[in-house]
Image 1: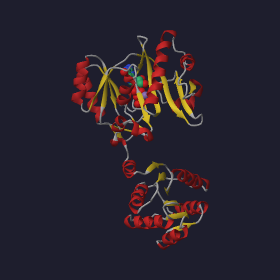
Image 2: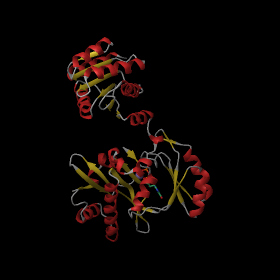
Image 3: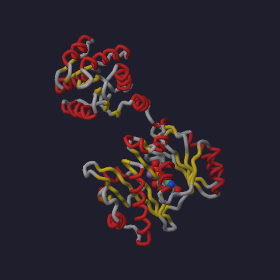
Image 4: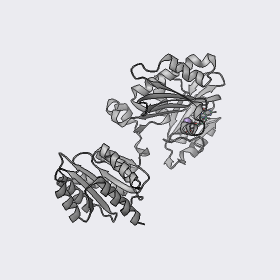
Amino acid sequence: MVKLHEYQSKTIFARHAIPIPSGKVASNADEARQIAAQMGKKVVIKAQVLVGGRGKAGGIKVARTPDEAEQIADRILAMRIKDLPVRKVLVDEAINIAKEIYLGVVIDRAAKCATMMSSAAGGVEIEEVARTTPEKIVRVQIDPAYGLLDYQARELAFGIGIAKPLVRDFIAIASNLYRVFLETDASLAEINPLVVTAENTLIAADGKIVVDDNALFRHSYLEELRDVDEETSAEREARKAGLSYVKLDGNIGCMVNGAGLAMATMDVIKFYGGEPANFLDIGGGAKADKVKTALEIILSDSNVKCVLFNIFGGITRGDEVARGIVDGLKEVRTRVPMVARIVGTNAEEGRKILADANMITAETLEEGAQKAVAAARQVK
Ligand code: GDP
Ligand code: MN
């Protein structure tokens, strides 16, 4: 998942004829001052961090003069918002807001298609609107063969009471946003708020695009936009080692070969009352160095009280994987209990190797998950 910064998303919007305020990015207060001076009008200084709620956190402030822009930029660049350091600010021409609207496209997995949503309750996070006043969200499902149809765009407009003279512009923005979504292979493209200005025009005041990792090879320029400073070190190490890793909140670390098997493993852990600490697919092979990296990543999470290995021996034989695990374990010093379930080709040999290395072994996933849950409970 590559999240784009507001200024990057808005640049892509502009290329697709979605109106955005004029603006430029600054990395220090002096630059912010110069940009404000060049623009010669009121500006907004906006922290560029990959989280929502920057406004509430004090990361968005209006500056009337270049001096003020410098002072505010200086303050915002010294901030951390939701634990992320602010490294850049966007200096945007300030706009006169009459109304804030939400407009966004996401992949709707249940409906198996993209869904576009609009809401008159813009400016706040859409998840919040969905929770408190779901009736304020209008949704249309987009058939990939037809794209966003005109009547659907009108439904989104009329459903949130867009004023007649703005309907045509709104429809153009909606169809352009859908094009952005398609062309960047996004899993999310949203404008929040889409502002109705006091002058009665529409303009995208904020933008967010999340690109699917699996599509990055089609968009090298998007890969370059990846902000490695915003990744946690575990995520960065996993990406470099070619591991799929997602941190979760539980205490049972999971080391699994295969994405589907990893999902099943998490389900079974939960079924027996445990909570997985991560999703991790070490992929095929499972050689010692990969196991070692994966284990280091899992153990870097201090919540982890136990690690469950769930390995399917196929082309890579079970005993080979077991040796990889044992070699990997030799290099990672830890007292966290390890449970291993191994099946498939040469599973018995594999289990023997692991048992000799003092790992708790299991023959079935049920047994492995129950042992892992019990082991995690014992550790205080
Ligand atoms: P977020 O809080 O991280 O989603 O950041 P946004 O870019 O959505 O900004 C939050 C809020 O700041 C918006 O909902 C607006 O109310 C306000 N805001 C942002 N840009 C401007 C601007 O140019 N002028 C004015 N007056 N308010 C702005
Ligand atoms: Mn926003």
